Each structure stands twice: as C-alpha cells, then as structure tokens.
Image (cartoon, rainbow, N blue to C red; front, top):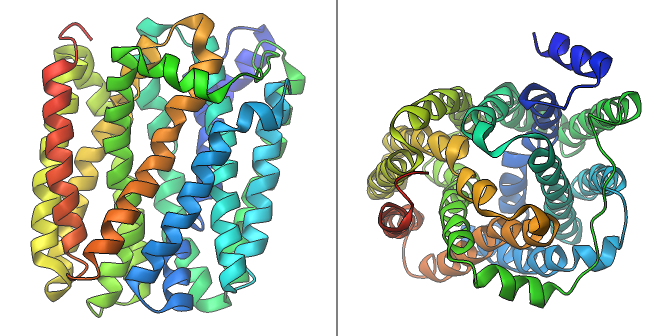
Length: 398
C-alpha cells in the first residue's frame, strides 16, 4: 500500500502526502535506531559509571545546541535536498567514529549523530509544512509516526545484539547500510518528481533574532515546552533506561529488547491521533503527560532493586509517550506562520538539544548523591508540571 501510494504520487505529480514522508521517516528512523541503545551502553563500557556518561552527554548536548542554532550560517542558502543529504553523510561519519571504541570517537560520534539527525529533522519538517495542510496534521502526523514503528521495533534490539556478538563495528555497519538506503530513496523521490520534493533553501539569518522572534509568540513558546517535555522522557528513557537495567543486574540484550518493545508501541500513535480528532488535542496531550509522570515516578521508586518492575512502568510511560509523538507536534505546526517556517523551525528544533542537555546536567548532579532510579522520579515530577501547563494554556479548539 505504501509503495503503491508513493508510485502514484510520482506518476501523477500530486502533492506528497503522509505515506511518502512516512516512508522517508521510517528509513531515517532505522538509521538512528540501530545505534540508539548502543550509544549509551558503549559509553558506559568506556567510562564505567552512569555519572560520567551523564557528564559526556552534557558536553555533547551543549555543543549540538550551539551548532543547531548556527545551521543557517553553516548551510547558507543551500537547497533543502542538499541539507538533507549532508545530514545523511554526517550520520555515516558518526557511525564510523562510534565504531572506533575510544572516548574521543565516542564523543565525536555522539556529536555528529545528533547533528545529522538535527539536519534531517529540520529539513523534513519544512517539507511537511509545505505539503501537508494544517487541517490534515492531526491525521497525517500519527500515520507518519506509525510507519516508523517497524524501524524502532527492530533497530535497538538488533543494534545491541550486533554489538554483543560482532563488536563495535557490527551495529555501525548496519546503520551505514541503512543510511545508504535512505540516500537512494530520498534522491529517487527528489529526482523523479519535483512536486514530491520541491526546491527550497535554508535561508541565512540571525539566530539570536530568530530566538527573540520565537519567544515573543506565546503559542510557539507553549509548543516548544510541550515538545521539550516529550523529548525529555525519550532522551532519559533511551540513555538511563538501559543503564538502570544493567546496574540492576539484567543482561544488556534485555535492555535492547526493552527499547525495541517501547517503540513497538508507536503503533498506538495512530489511535491517539484518531482520539485527538474526536475529543481534541489538548486533553490527549494533558492526559498523556499525567500518565508518563505517574509511571516514571513509580519506575524510579522500583529502581535497580526491582529492575523488571521498573521496566514494566517505563514501558507504560512509553505507551503514553506515543500519544505525544502522534499529536505533540501539532501545536507548533498549526501555530507557526507560513512565511516564518524556515526561520522558526531551527529554533523549535532546539527542544531536542535542550532535552538532552538539561536532564543530563540535572541527573549528573543527582547521581552524585542518589542511585539511578532517582532520575525517573525527577523526570516524573517535571513532566507533571509540563502537563499542567499544557492543560492550562492549550486552546480548547486545537
């Protein structure tokens, strides 16, 4: 069905839809998922403690944040297709650095992996805003997220298995192969039909001016806070979830299976999207944050003393997080003005960098005094606050 839809789009020249972008996003997700869990486990193997992993994540996240805001200067007036292509190449470079199994290679690999993901994320978001009407976002975004489910179900567990059985190069070779497939798919779509991937540029501009412009718009600020809260959960889950399992005496392979199982829940993103169409985006976002908060605190209380119980509640939180994945980006997509999309998208995208940076700083301090379960307790309390803000300020008509 997906192949037929894409082929029809290419043949008829119609505007690209959710299935076309879903196919690109699914392959992009496979590239990232194959070493998503390996990154934290390998860092732990290199550094020896969760606190040192958190400190490394802090440095990398801060560097990526600065780079993201400078993208318009670095990329100049480059067309989007070339910006996306550079993102793919940077992801390949990241895999090669991670495979070196050195502290320098680990730091460089983490940095370039996040930068490459940022380039692709910003560019794909611009394409989506060009092709998908605002009224269709509540239906199209959950479809796009659901199509990436297979990638996130297979990738993390496969990456850990390759890491255990074939060493550091195992998962990275698989990620490089997936990146090559993404390169071919993206350029096949671009070269076959200019309507599918319209020409465009990432225009140069003043990053500080864009940040100030972004901050002056309350709806964009709210959209950023919601996306930041959602991303805080996933960054914490991907980094500290496997570490909690390993410190609790559970095999590494189980932590990879846990991450893959959590991503299988992305299938529910479509159902959350349908629910949002019926009852509205605001109640879905608010209830999902509440469920994540309660489950995260419970998982933290279980901690490494009861790792399987903690894993159960982390997966419950992941189920609720799929609802935010399905509809959590809609407040921004509906709020941003068409003529400001290219200026505001990189600023909005910083929620990912901040969600890596701020928790890493807080957790590095917390882990100096408490066990690893404390990070999920802190996370749950913070997300309860974000959910309250969303319920208070999101328009009922959204």
